[in-house]
Image (cartoon, rainbow, N blue to C red):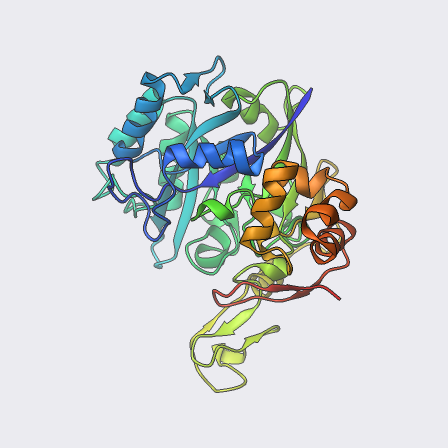
Length: 394
């Protein structure tokens, strides 16, 4: 078996012809720049672009195929310049009867199958050119449509307070989807504000693999969370087998941000900006009395937990706290660029480059920051309400 770093949730900002695909997302995120960034800068070997439902993104992918930059692989997915695999995905929004909205991902092996799904979803989505649009249907119906196309279906950032399965729609998967249809889900994406320790407190999720993906809206954010895949080749069918722990394929390890760094880890008052843990009595801020408290993922999971912390299914891989290099004190843009230019990709810097080499190129402070992350000694100040947490190096 081989091992591959994979980030299955990256957004396209605009098409090559300047048409918006995902708002708000950086204009620097085109299909080509995503693949170049993954290949040359990040060291991510498998990238899932989740806006391929858009005909404009399909045109850009087709253009790369026509020029020979993308090659359809046996087993599905495309290979870019013999260096990074592209998996085609779609992010779609659903809405429940009570108003709760949810984002989900559907992955398919090639442009032909994605165009077929796009044509069907265009009957339900008013502007199929824009990503993550509301499909005007409940979660269960979208699951059924994805299943009819043999797609890999994954609830996205499953616990965040806005537009997620458990954060906005339900306490239990079983209230939206019969257990007989659980097999239609390929995996669960955790999101930046949750980890395996937190998510495994919901017992009905034990049968699923967890994905740690970036949900990148700018080139810098690609690979801020990622998965280590163990499989024969970086192709669609192998990814499908790994999600389902089949044929010896698996997600060997999850690399995710410490949940406290996520934008929605703890409660936050929209009125005064206070970030706080614990229950907000009657949804009221304990500081200013404001009634627009955004419930944190930590607080939400405490509400719906039905298994004790520290219990996991036997198959659950290790979850490693990973701080994106851009968040480290002492690693500004110029310093990070210098490190990448001299020492290789960000994956190399995170996992392989000796600290002595980092110190030689960027100085003692940068080396100390990387060492603190590797050793787990960095202190974290929690985020909430849309503001990221921050790293403190002692």
